[in-house]
Image (cartoon, rainbow, N blue to C red; front, top):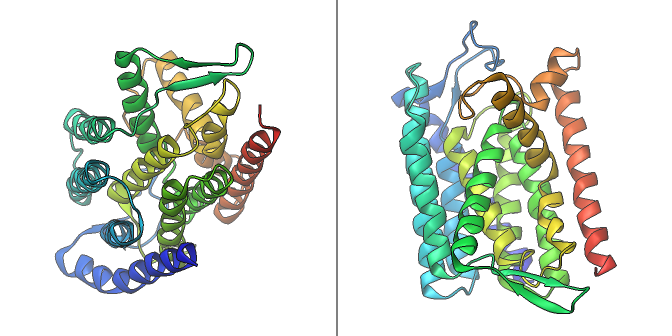
Length: 319
């Protein structure tokens, strides 16, 4: 019942907050304007960018009420969320004025938010080797590097996936539900609660972001969802992981991770800046191949569901 209550509260908070924040966005000019010279801007009218604030409030309020983490862990997650949201809003504000916010300060803040989570004790310590029947505990410096890079990486790939109405929100909801099932199966109530709260916020957002979108979450919202998904995986699926089950959270986030690994590799080969946005993600490639936007989104969400089912099957194999 607690999971249902947390889901419902997160959903209601986001659902109720988005309309007034949408009006505020139009009043202050915080909208994403169509740009004919930008192949990534496929909408035809100004769209408010304030859904990120509703998503963050909905998640954080419900998290504080329902999740029983230690005080340092709760403080790190809330502080990290605020940092991610703040730098994302600055980035979105620049974009509303057709300016590019420098990548370095944005990256620095996201890495620092991930570092806060590491310092709180949510860490990738290592894995269980079923062949030697021993725990493999990594060096402390490697724990730091892998923990921070994982959170930063998931934060980035969800943001890179936010290119079409309903896509990033849908991918986040599917991945969150997968991580919820995994956490329940492993008896990890804290991680399960965070996951179901995230699903509630994402689905409420999708009510307004489904094609044609009435509101966007911008970089602020997409990076926030990615940050929380990264934390959930560390706090749940990566715990007590074996050499094979370590792939469970990676599969749970299959479409964003594998698509953007391909994109990053392609940019490196072509000598392009890794962090500069372009139209090389799968949704843009499918769109240019002739698929309609709603078909592209449906196809990628279906693929992510398949990845999620694969991760659950891997969990059930208990290897």
